[in-house]
Length: 283
Image (cartoon, rainbow, N blue to C red; front, side):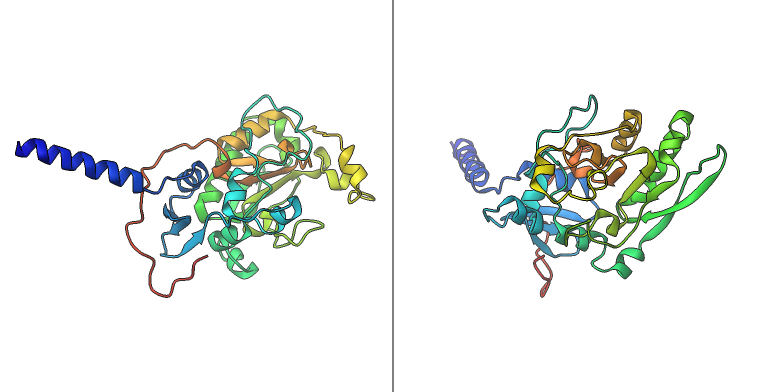
């Protein structure tokens, strides 16, 4: 009888615990999987960082499209539009720009909130030069091993000589600046992005440089791309998403965004193992 009562109590406890446990939204799980060096856990609508600070996941605000871009929370960041990895590449639907809603607070905390702090993490990557056998140095952040992932991309690209013209004479990597025509910081500001050869790629604001701000341009925008999709496959394999999968196309552009791609490793994530340190700011 005692064993029976004990089993009943254990079952009741597990049932109550499971009902009270804070479920982890899929978007949160993808963040935890993608950035294990920085993020520890999730509870009560907050992401726990390993330094003891917290960041709100969902601000529960209804936002217009412009408000979502200008005040993106992590829930918007993860769930607005899901990036479609792999091939074939379909022509993006109207205003379908997966990955362009970026939580600036998140990136600034992870990669640097000022130009000086972001620049302090830059390290060189050996990249392809126009002539076979030659190389050059480009600079990206070492945080999250972005330099190592980009170096792996370069090592694959060098084995495909026919792709060299598209990936040399690049448009740039680190550049602390806002996105053209906005107040939002470009992912180039954090050292996680690279623009390939601008003469062999397309950008919608350059294609419509005199009137890109007109609504009529967006309504009639025709997607363009001349970049070989082999390049896209290589970059995605190492955690980078491609601006060519956006309705507002930017086919030279790749940025390190592993949370947008299928997880390479699942982690057992539950409640935080410690409370945030006294005085730590939420956010």
